[in-house]
Image 1 (spheres, rainbow, N blue to C red):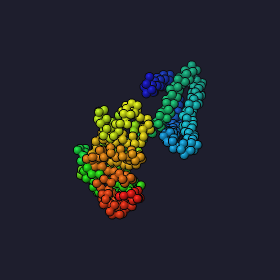
Image 2 (cartoon, rainbow, N blue to C red):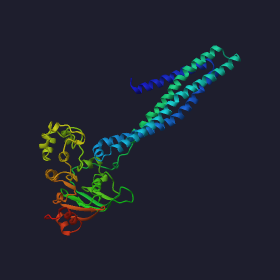
Image 3 (tube, one colour):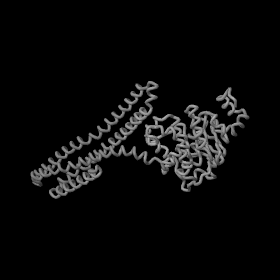
Amino acid sequence: MCPVFGVHYTFIANILTLVGILIAMFSLNVWLALASVLVVPIMGWFTMFVAKYTRRGFRDLQKQIGQLNGTIEETISGQRVVKAFRRSESTIAVFRKNNQAVYESGKTANTYAFLLMPLTSQLGNLFIIILAGLGGYLALNDLVTVGLIATFISYSQQFLQPVRQLSNMYNSIQSALAGAERVFEIIETDPELKDSSSAHSLENVKGHVEFENVDFSYEKGVPVIKNMTFEARTGHTIALVGPTGAGKTTIINLLTRFYDIDEGSIRIDGTDIRDIKKDDLRQSLGIVLQDTFLFSDTVLENIRYGRLDATDEECIEAAKMADADHFIRQLHDGYHTNLSERASNLSQGQRQLLAISRAILANPGILVLDEATSSVDTRTEARIQSALLRLMEGRTSFVIAHRLSTIRDADYVLVINEGEIIEQGNHNELLAMKGFYYNLYMSQFKGQEI
């Protein structure tokens, strides 16, 4: 039987039993029946009183279970770091602390939950005593017979049983509601940003990007991007360089509209991105990050993630363009090889090539490369650079790089520091200025020919 149907069946059966018994009792004697009915509001009050604390207890229990699960998931995911830094004992101590908190919350919640049954049993015994006392008084005054009193006591036992079941059912519902609250908190969470009512689709993206007087802050009063203005023309490559924390990745987050700007405007092909549907905006952007995320699926399906309606042949062609086909075919099942969690059975360079294959398949109008080659060796970097050049051909591209050798051929270089553009121009122009970029470049290639 379906659990939901079973609950409904039990509820309806108890209600019908109560109604039937009440009709029988009132038909026998009104005074004894009224005395019997008095138990309902008393039990109802106790049930509501206990259920309030039961729900609070189970709400705390769900919160503690969530924290415990988070600790377990984080520890398993980062077990190599835990082992490398010899933090096993401290991690176990944190687990035990969270586990003890779950135990204490569970003990409190279940204490309240199991308190209702003995309370209703004692109330039932008290009710029988009152009924017997009233019945005895009426019998002494020849208003009822002893047999009728015995009948009412029998009815009272049958009457109390569904009342107890309904009380316990209500108490159990509090546990379910406490769990449901956490689920609905997530379901009802507003998306990071909503499309405006006037938002429209973006078609045939050419890739002309403009930032005009853009201000942005994660926290009010702490500016991260300050009055930023620049233009990326169609098909050009724009390099973003600067020290860590300068705001380079924030610029990309604003372009992809993971955050909305405070002031100014960002336009693609002359249209403010706030007037473009988010799905269309992000579909026009291809992103290759330093930390590539691949799913526990086949190599083919991970490439197809760039465009779900792509055929196998299109996925393979994208892999060939990314220079990934040769290593994929060397895997034990080729394109049908299942990747382990986070693709740990591939090297960093191989994961990057798959990410580039995915981006090629998506065929975006605007490309974003965020430190795409920073964590690979020089030989692998050369292969990835070759694949990236094919991917960037004919597309507006934004390249974030700390290795300045990777952006020598960029059409335009923006030097970012503390959220502001402090220098801009191509590679040679910036070197000739002998400013911030020159010093940054020389620190990496000191002693080498420029």
